[in-house]
Length: 343
Length: 140
Image (cartoon, rainbow over all chains, first blue to last red; front, side, top):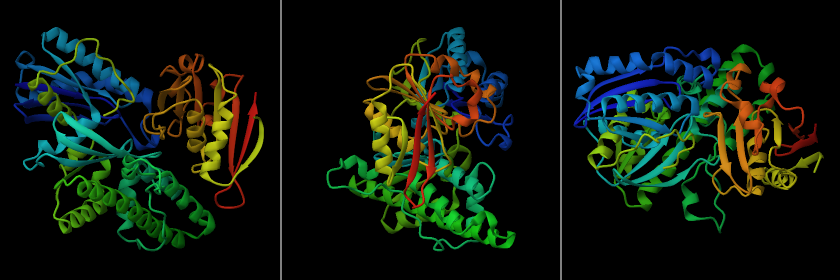
């Protein structure tokens, strides 16, 4: 079964071709975007998707050596994401599937991330705990099977990647903030400032599922208070550089500790032996290292996809589409984008 | 429910939002102003609670806009990452705000020129103590 996957939920236009679950090609185009915008600009994003989608799909087919009429189905992200961006991918996929008279299947972007490790040689056995952590999401999911999963908890406010971006902004660093903080933190002291742990404090009556939640907004505010307290803006350059490194390290420590703690707790509570992490923040070197150490010491196995499959890509969408079509699940031509699609 | 208020904790900010939600009617637009960490999302979480939204209301910074269903329809915008007004006009912003929903807009200063003349304004500032916020609510 040969599947074409299409992903346009945010700023990457991506297409991939998958044959019987094995990846033949994966093209990701994000060249039209520049950090000068300080992020993803929705209208520019959807316009750029329109501009490149035909070329990206052609390139994916060409480098896979697959002709359009050999396709058995098209999988497309229909949420969550930016409405305008999603609309481009969904409309394109519907038109193409209609023209080729092949089935179309809508895929949840988060499910794509959850199963991105299945594009690798090594992937977890069921059940596993998935941590999806990016600029838009921070979620823990218990995955019993390809088609059976449960959201255990998510962020109550900002996503982890968003916290990286906003703290980077407070520190006068560029966008996206994650890589800058990751790099600077290596030269800083993670114990320099004790920031609050970004996990909501438990109250006696709270529901159990809340115990897998995160809250990064307070951490962002704590960094802000700290910088105000030390009068950061008026420090000299040398002193500023030192503070930036130390605050980066301390902030990153707090984020990583919370992500690791909640993930390990979920694995233990549900007696699950495997953990998978995905999403852009899975590229963070401190998160990878700490999660690996902690998982090993608890006798758990950790799976992280290669960097290219941590960030948004159509290969993961094609994979979930393949599983769905194999199980007889498909969409009809009424398929429409859902910006806040749930698991 | 107009005037200047002092809140001493995140919960008090949420409660103030909840109180304020009682004056809101279909079609109202609420513009929020305040720095990072000043409590805009918290205030909106309170408003949404008051409007009967049961799902999680988190920051839509990344996807620019969320919609919820409560007693009224709610659109929650976050223009933190927007630089130019043009960028949001074409996403259909006007169709959203001239509508029967309540529109809550974070970082409203970025789209000042295209906000409707008739709207609520909520300005959040840091107080003298760490968790204090001074929140001024007015109607234009």
